Length: 222
Image 1 (tube, rainbow, N blue to C red):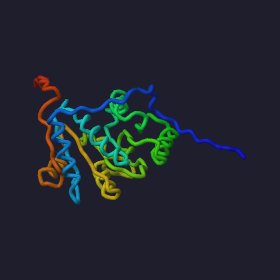
Image 2: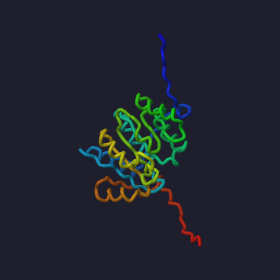
Image 3: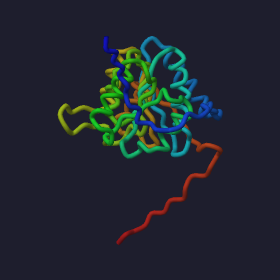
Image 4: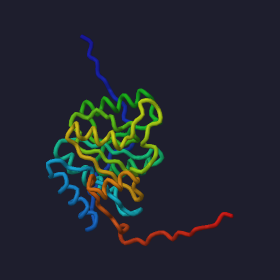
């Protein structure tokens, strides 16, 4: 008999390193607790984190993901294509190790297929990517995080046309998952829904380690 072994490619090429725990400051911990309280409700709402630039939203995402993984579920993290950098992926990789994978337009069709199959087979628990990563076939999806939720790149202009934020909310309802949105400048639609209690609004008003906000000047280009 011929034995066939299938090996799927891993696009994250890094050496194994010791996983690092996430440490939150009191304001970040308050937001995490607020989100978890919302999840305990019979019908949890999407949570919108409105935090200033540099407030540490990524650490909050990782803390929430860690809790979901302990329950044996998986996580999808959507970020704008332009933000899908090596440094961004490494922050999650240092926390969750080789259970993290990525999905982006730079991968070949075969590499994207491999990541879908790895997720379906349970070989990865965290998928990071732009809007296309939303359709990762996780068997037990627990959380969908959309960072910089105001970005226009979450809207698909090609067929099938969809908005990743609205599609994520519908998928979460179908799979008993939860949705967390994050932005320093929330979209008008999301902030309106948060003001009308359709979303749970949580705010971060200070930067990590009380770093000062950058100085801004308005320059008249005329």
